[in-house]
Length: 99
Length: 99
Image (cartoon, rainbow over all chains, first blue to last red; front, side, top):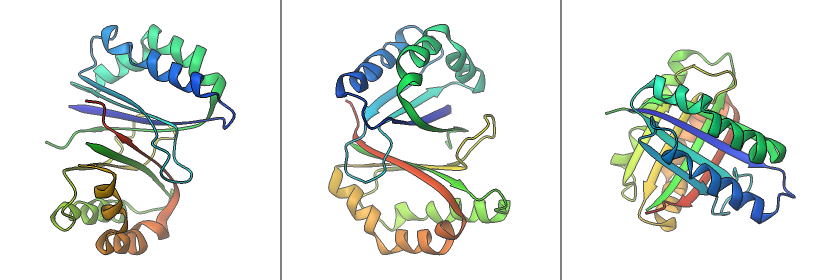
């Protein structure tokens, strides 16, 4: 399996409803992107200073599955409409899941 | 389950051996911290510009399990000896895993 993790930090004045909307719309992607095997989108629990606001953990069969997700038009549209306008910073990683 | 994710970005001049040493030492923690249920430490595959270098994904029964890991002396020693001197930036999140 090939894993992609991204942590999103939003502008501090982002309303809670916008934050929830990002999560809700991302969670529609497993029904639209057929290379996704597991997909977890979560809002940070607020326990530690400086944490990211939203995480996405996505598993694919291989690197090509991730690339198909990354470039999928429905994914790109959510990024454009919902995430990019509110994004303060973003950090990601991809790796083969150790078996 | 309660999940903790941290993405570490190291100083660019960090030798590969130091990077591997961080991973190797972190991977000893599941044998020493009894609240860890699943633990994945991985080096970034190098496919995207600006990615973090190392990720840790750790699952616990609950928030208390995470706090015990966070504060465990063996964990703190690895942070002090291996990670802190080479750390450029760090971003983390914790959340209840959706069932």
